[in-house]
Picture 1 (cartoon, helix red, strand yellow):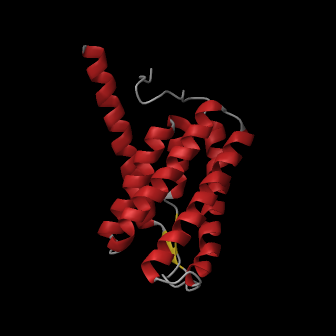
Picture 2 (cartoon, one colour):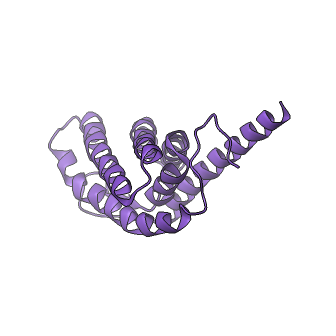
Length: 177
């Protein structure tokens, strides 16, 4: 019983640290591009999101990404976007983690990031369409979303290649040793 309690505590700490890292990287390192209707926010919050999802799996990826970036939306004045971000980015983290839990290869990591990019583009296109009531305006945000994921991929892939030697993927129910 004592071991289970320790495992739960450790999982809670990992999830909280992931949420904090995503929030901080989204908050402190962002740029607003003048190319889209919503200002084209491009940030580095996807970097810790993808690293966490690849190394620690789908549940940690979903929690860190969804909650971390939705929290940024709430605190940063993008409140209307928070529910969409929670779902879209949570799904991105879940998908990346699910793909990488099964296969720990560079090809799988690239495939996972491509899947996340598709989720981001389609998800935020739909969110903007709903928010703005216009299905043409969201097209302007697609380049910023592609740049955001592309920059994150360039940073994440070499970092994960080094870190994966020191981290073992485990499920939410399983403990890290």
